[in-house]
Structure formats: structure tokens, C-alpha cells
Length: 417
Image (cartoon, rainbow, N blue to C red; front, side):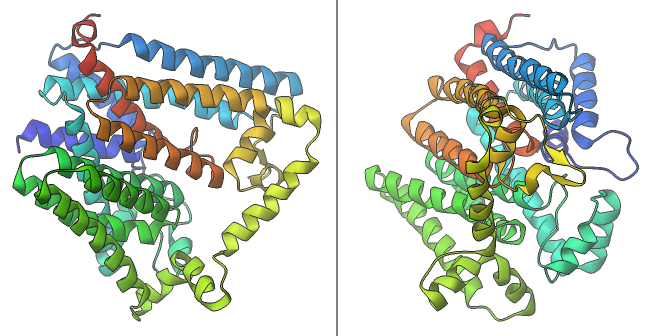
């Protein structure tokens, strides 16, 4: 690997995971935006944009002005989602534009190059998580590099089976984003002709899967969607070799989960208490449920008490002191409480624009199906937590795919200022 490509991958890791370096006044993503802009300037490369990007930015600006008006008119002074919307434009979109430009300058202009990068950084993240769990000095070293408030308490509370990683979020958000990589891998196995690369994708899926189990069980939904992709595509596929590879990776995923369920080590037992709680209740009570799901349903029942005004424009409140407004842990409910159905519709339109940008420029049918599963997963993740505005890592992963896709389809237009 060339040094410039290696630096680009390190830059991608820090930007997408927004590594919170200890003692730095700026987050990792902001540092990388400055670095990427300087890199392009030194290489005498102009920063170019696509026309589709204007539409993505425009809809987020509409949501931003609506949110601002809502906060000022209701005089709440709660700018939580306003700040997230500003970050969406100035941090996530701008950073992804710069990153795509850098990939273009390196001759990495295909969507497979971006998906490969996302799998590689997810693999590196999973190795960091595993080493942190197994080697205390390494965990201490990572904790010194990146300051995450409450990390030590989180690890202690879950029996040292959770709270590891080198990212701004080391729980729910990161679990979902690691699951994205699991969903990319079957597609990449189909599309690459390099046997060594195929082997890398197969082997990397196991540490990534393990990292998901240490971060949050919502990531298992992504694993399930990846299995749906594998079995659906393998039925339609003529190549026996690739079909068998897909079956093998799907089977190994299932075997890995079953193995973890039946392992009695102290570490795995700690993981099972929250990762496989649903399976445990299924075998003991006959019902698949978790404490988290029960709590979410209890919170969801409060939605019937909302006033008409709250339903339409919200209460312009996201937090209430140190906790979420109305003590809710449901992402959709937080949105309704903040900017009502009107804001929710604008947010959905924003993601529909992003989805259409990807779909309309998709290289093949398999890619379209994979992206459909990704966006289904996004909606599921958003039900559990505020994912569509607050999860920078997930947003950047989706945006960088959308931007590189559009740039491939419109290379002549992409080359203009």
C-alpha cells in the first residue's frame, strides 16, 4: 500500500469515527476537515461539488431554519437538534465532499473503493476493541488517546464486556455502524475478482461481528439483514464459487453467534447478559423480549398523551436538565417532541433525497438491494435512538457513498468548479 493511500485510510478512520483526541480543542472529524482541505490545497486540487449535493444541502437548510424558528418562537433556548443540523452541513457533508475528492485524486473513484475503505476501518476498529478487551495496558493506552466521558463506568457496569473502541461513541451508534460493514462484505465478495481480497472480507467479518456484540444488540439486526442479502443473492447467482462463499460466510456468522451463546467464560457471560437477553427470555418464558424493548414500549405509550400542538410543531425541547425531554429514549419520539410531524417529514425528505441519489446512480441490481437494506436498518436504528441527525459516523458512511456514486455517474460535471 502506498504511503499516501495509508494516510488517506487513517484520515478516513479519524474523520468517520470522529476520534475525540484527549486535550484537543477540536474533534477528530474537524481536525481531518482542516487536514483534508490543506492536503487538496497543497496538491493544487480544486474542491468540486456535484449538483445533487446542492439538493441535499438545501433540504437540510430548510429543516435548520424551521428548527430555529420553532425554538425562537417557543422561547425554549434548546438548540440541540439545531446544532446537529449545522454539523450535518458544515461537518458531515463538507468532510465527505473533501474525502471523496481525495479518493478521486488517488484514482479511487469507484463505489467499491469506498465500501472497501469502510470495511477496512471497521475491521481496524474491531481489532482495537478486541485488543482493548484482552490487554489492559492497551486499553489504558487507547483511553489516554481518546477521552470518552463515563467510559470506565460503562466498562465496569457491563463486567468489562462493553465500552471499548476508538470513536466518539462506543455503544449503540458504533454497533449500528459496525453492522454496516457486515452488510457491505457480501456485496464486495460478489464484485471482487481478487481471491486474496475475498479471503480478507471473509476473515474480517468475524472480528467485526464480535465487535458488534460488545457494542449493542441493535447491530445484530444489521447482521440479520446481511444474512437476508446473502441467501437472496445466492439463490439468483450462477457462479457456484461465489455462491458457496456467501453460504460459508452466512453459516459462519450463525455458528459464531451460537458458539458465543454456549460459551461459559466470564467475559462472554457478561456479554450474554445484554446481547442475548432476548434469546434467553425466549427459551425460558417463550417470549422474545428484553428490558430495553419493554422500556421502549412503555415510553411509546406516552405518545398518545401528546397535545395537537406537540404533534404538529413539537415543544422545541430535546433535553430536560441532564436527561432527554419527557425521559424518552426513542429517536422518533425525540424528533416529534422537538419539531413535530412537520420536522419529521422534512427529515425523511432529506434522507429520501440521499437514497435516490444513491439508487439512481447504482452500478447494479445487487447494490440497490444492499442499499435498500441499509436504509431499512437506518429507520430501525432511528426508532431506538436519534440516529438520523445525531450519529455522525452513520451519516458520514451514507453520505460518502452517495457522493462518490453521483460523481461516478457525472464525471464531466464533477470536474467543473
